[in-house]
Structures are given as structure tokens and as C-alpha cells.
Amino acid sequence: MTEGAIPESWRAALEPVLATPESRQLGGWLRAEEQAGKTIYPPRGCRLRALELTPLDDVKVVILGQDPYHGPGQAMGLSFSVPGGVRLPPSLINITKELESDLGIPRRRSGDLTGWARQGVLLLNNTLTVEAGRAGSHARHGWEAITDAAVAAVAARNAASVFILWGSHAQAKAVRIAGLEDGRHLVLRSPHPSPLSAHRGFFGSKPFSRANAFLATHGRGTIDWTL
Image (cartoon, rainbow, N blue to C red; front, side, top):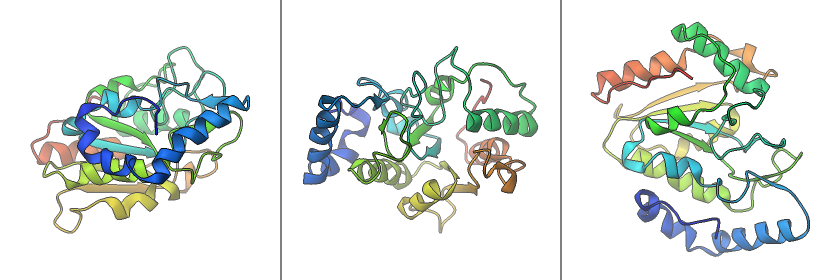
């Protein structure tokens, strides 16, 4: 996998996975897809952004997504986030609605979640690339082993952390989270914020206040969820 240098804080956790044949093949496969004229999101240089902005030792909360947005100008290497000035996708609109309901934070036009990432919120997708217009197109090509290892590395620390798992794809990663049996970490599960499922339990789940309450109880401070 040659999508850029793994940030130093994540290197020890991820290098064993990156040395596997499957991970080595991932980089070659992505290059072949691009050489075939396919548009891949996010662009090169942004694909490891979640790891770059949130060092392993700083992680307080993990929010897992499925794969990057597959429309032009949307994906920026952070799950659910879009650059400032880009129209908010439906799932992100619903996240801002729940944020307002949960914490009273007024909805804003910006969907850039970089501020969360810099505070210790790891905004990680299960798959870190996608072909334009084809959701899920890069699943099962090698990214999953890498993101599994990232989740496991967060859970392996002694520091209490919160894992927010929205939807079945994210919840499948719960098996990578050690420390649940002793209460060291908190896992919050709910339906995905997509318009297709948000009304089945995402709305009203209060993930932001619950995460902050857990972090404060365990001496890790809180997250300023203001966008």
C-alpha cells in the first residue's frame, strides 16, 4: 500500500498489516484503477488524513463510516466530513440535527469536521477510497485489514475511549474493540444517520453528550462538538 507515509504515531500498529501481500496489492490495484481512467475519491494526499490529524495517543472518540463520499468535491479523508463551502450530504445533515437536539448546538452550513479530528475524534471510514459514483466499490480490496488494525490499536491502549458505531458496517468492527468487558471503553451503537435509517433510532440516541459524559468520568476531558 503506497498511498503515502503512515503517520509516525500509527506506524507500529499498522506496519505488520501493511507488510501483508493483501496490503501490498492494494496500492497496485489503486494505481491500475486510476491508470484505467477511473476517478478515485478522496484524491491522493488525503486518503490517510484521519490518521494524520488524530495521532493514536490523542484518540478519545472513534466515529466509523462505511466509505468516502463518492460525489465530486465531497470526500476529504475524514468520515462524514466535507470541505467548507460544499453542500452537506443527507447523512451529515442528520448528524447536525442530532447534534442540535442533543447539545443545543445550532446547525451551520459548514460540514468540515476537521475541528473534531484535531481534538481527538478519529473520523475513520472502513474503506478509505471509493470510485466516483459507486458507493462501496472499493470494499474487500485490502483497506478493511488496515482500518481493523487502527481500531484495535485504539482499543488496546489503557486510555478510555468512545467508539460510535452508526449502522451495520461500523458495528461489525466491534469485534476489534478489546476492553469492553471491563468497562474501559464505551461503545455506542445506533442506526446509520442516512435518511433511510435515521428515524429508526439514530435520532434521539444522544451520542455526543453520552460520549462527553463518559470521557469526563474517566478524566479525559470532553470534546467541543461545535462545527
